[in-house]
Length: 116
Image (cartoon, rainbow, N blue to C red):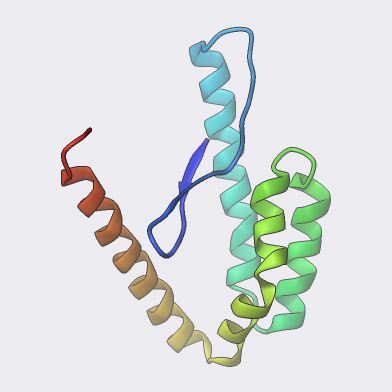
């Protein structure tokens, strides 16, 4: 399952091996991804760093075995992410929107590039 970082780089969130690529397999994976991203809202909507770390610990317990790379990415980069919680909620919301906008610009640039 691919993902895109805030810098616009593609990363693999998970590799799942199934007997075949059926609609049932993809429906299950997309359902998981929706639940996973919903759970992550508790991290980035946390009122402070401690609450965010507690939410991240919950995610590690719930999703860590199934999506270890996605969770460890947050843990390994926590020093950079934690500075985000020093700002008030209103400023963080604006920063998040700006990061999503900038990441989407990088993705769109790659879409319009010619394939090799």
